[in-house]
Length: 405
Length: 180
Image (cartoon, rainbow over all chains, first blue to last red; front, side, top):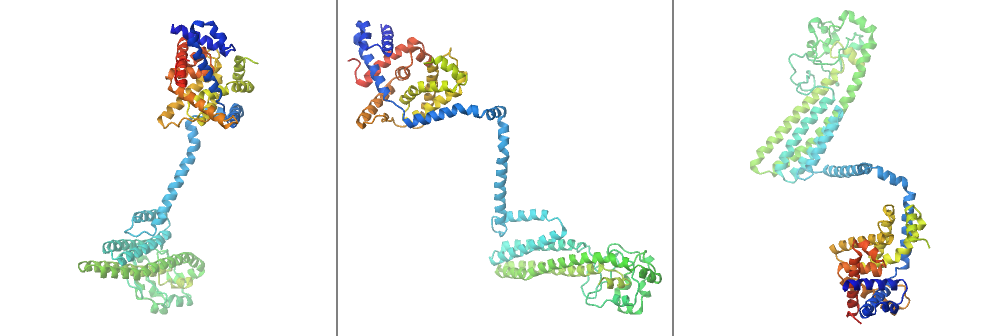
């Protein structure tokens, strides 16, 4: 029954949809009129209400525009679509991946750079101090040339001195002690690099000949001493030069190469009396010539005949050496200027330390001062020795030295 | 007037004018159908545009022998509404919007019509889902029994039964009584 009524209802509804009126449709099924009529009227009402649903004119317009754009889009962009189909997702990522990687790199570098810059003023008690130390290590590796190394280590020594002073001023005895140790190590490192930058050996290996002015570092026994002529002492070479004493052939200034003294007679005996009188007492131990050196008698004419050779070779070396020496002297001066800062810092730290710790602080001061004095003396000797080594090491070659000057 | 089948074939072949005509023929009823299924006008407008864009993108896959074009279009709309309602059910659904008939100049008449549309939507919401789907497609979308059956994947007999019961339920919901 109900099933049949479904069909009848649907048939009536369809007939009304296609233009028949309600009364005509109901007349076809008079037995169901009471059931069909209210339902069919309901469908009319639903349709009437639904007809009130109208889209906004602006929505209709923009929806149409969008639809037409969508229709035209595939025709305007076929190559792009083809490429998208062909290109796998990984290649798409790779196309933009480099930009992402570069951006990340820039952010990291900026962040690291900012942190490193901020750490440059960090003190040992501050969180960024390890970053500062790391930055210094990186800079240390990047300083390739000996000169740059010397400058860098000297600068770092200055920084360590400032840190020591800051910790002492803050009354932080423990950190001041650590800072003192760090300064001590850095000072030693700076001196080592300065000496290396001069092209000489480390202080423990350096032979410093006895001089008339500077203190003497114990020379190795197997190494013959070189004569040292202090700048302020009138050089006998001047006299020799005036007397046209032939210079000896200059041997490269390598103190570690012991000349074969057995083959070379002591030339001081053949020097003119004026030369011998003004010669430092150590010159008789320093032959300063090699087996290639001509005898004094022959050398007069030989060297006079070849003065240019003797002059030119050491002249270049002396020029470069003097530049190195002056730079080394500047760095040493810089280190020495820290002395007052460090002394005051150590003094302050000692004063602020507890009584039981005062002996320890005195030990630190003594240790640093002793090391500084030793290194300073060594450096002075080294400077003097190097100055001489860049000229003729022999008293007989005083003529050559005078020419260089 | 060109037949719908011919227009569809032309649209498949890339004839934009043919597809535009199909668009014009179906725009209002698709919009009405979606409007009574969702809560407010903005959602209905977005979904309506989306239905036609999707139809345009997949017109090449359409085959007339499988489904009439209107049924295919309403099927897209039906699935799109289901997705939308499912997504909305996870969030907080917007309140049912009353006012809609903006084209009427008389404010009183406009308000009355808005209320009648609101009543219709409320009555449809009270129906079981199967009856609501049939009633919406049949009375709002104006599809035939065969098209509704194909759209919903049901037999025509089932659709007729659902239609009859839905009409009776709507009458009760709208007027509070089954007869009269």
